[in-house]
Length: 104
Image (cartoon, rainbow, N blue to C red; front, top):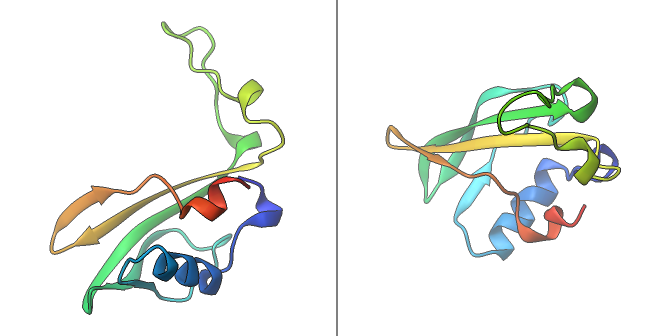
């Protein structure tokens, strides 16, 4: 993803709602905050972990077997994100943003 096209929390909430999910993320600074953050899922208190990394700071391991090399395939994308959604003590990995943001 490109840092310049990272959506705001409000834009993200609108896209989540448009996809049909009953999830509202509390406001936070997407570039500065990380770790566990609050949200409301189907009217219940919930939360998620959020991590945003700059691609330039990410390590590749070309000597591994098999090699872990990704930078040649990501073009001009300069940030990578990971998030995990929590509900009732169950951890579910959610590796993608709503489809409209994946094109960025």
